[in-house]
Image (cartoon, rainbow over all chains, first blue to last red; front, side, top):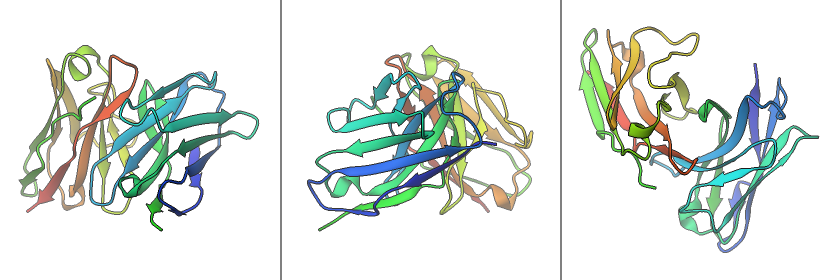
Length: 118
Length: 110
């Protein structure tokens, strides 16, 4: 059973860069059956898909965030990462990493709260 | 991409059935049989209930069922139980190879 775990700072200053890593255990991130993505949820609000990456490095991003977001993958460490530039209070959210099967999220990490504040 | 449209809330009594709708466009829900549903109790990560419109992962009770007509997908929960009280989200693959979620529906078991 694959498991996913987010890690990274819980507090980021406005205009700074949010950086998170997702470590995958119990299976290989190189699997062609899956791809890997990030989803966020502002406090008290709904889910927003941020973007995803295949083991080949091909990426797809939410058009509303694309100019500020970078997702990368490190197959040697079984990890993938998220960077969001020029953050503001609206980027405060619980960030989930998720395995995608059949093109949609199927297994989620527990989530990590990132607060943007000075 | 615009969020899929779900009713903000639904409710039902134990033992009853409820249906949650998820309306999109021909560029997402209507264009692909790639619709999933998730259950999210407060303070927890979402859990997959339905994939590819109507398939249940192992361990999900058959009280949960999914369907789709045109641009609208639906989740039906039959034999409501108190433990079903949670937020429910739909998601769809899109024509630009992204994923879009619905706004979420809060289910209250009366």
